[in-house]
Length: 340
Image (tube, rainbow, N blue to C red; front, top):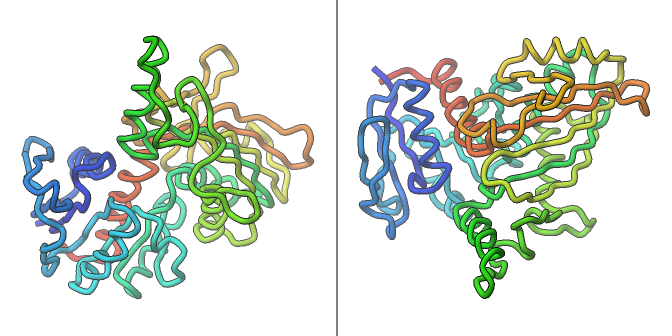
């Protein structure tokens, strides 16, 4: 016995990762359907040792299906998620479309699993932004102990967060720089990404911050605590997979770095790798394909009365997207849905 699962956007990076993780975590799947746009009709994707053919999202009937994992853009989600939800299929959406809707829970299971129960208002649950997801996993256990007042975070986000075309652009630009006459002009990004960093993710807002930075503020408040003050600088770096974050935290109460390290070691979803020696920390290359959010470089901030610095790394296609969605499905199943 299990659940009837639909993966929407199965040909994309995140959709394929959702299928991998459903298999790896042995999610109880009774039946599975993979959907994509009409131009990808018939495209084959892997689910464990099975090969599945994509069906047309536009004509698919969600009636009788339990959970739909959406990995498509906001515009398509706006059109199709209500269709699935109305048919009785619970939507777990990876786009930004529903994240700020007060009637849609925004969930990171290690942080606010109980919020899943609010899905009944619209039959939809939102997955947070990739940079927010890994950060709040690290912040929550520390917040429970000493109450966070303010967070200053700088992100170093991989190109996979922008999709396959961005990964191709990094690869082709890097090759082109070594072959005269084969340089590749920017198209996905406004400036060269190879051997460069770009302090610009998503669109600019009137106050000067980018929407990616605004997302981290709004989502942290919704998921964790509206009283937390947060400021972010989000940067795209020439890394294929894996987001990194340098996080400075100011607490209401004093928290010693040793206690912080012990708390994080015991926290769900976190692996602490923090040796004060060459290589005694985790980099993006090492987190690829892993479930954990890694925390390193835990240390006191001597400029604050109650401050801690840390370094946080995670596979953005997993914890930042596909893994978190599957974890939400697991919580939904255990708390709310009956197996077919």
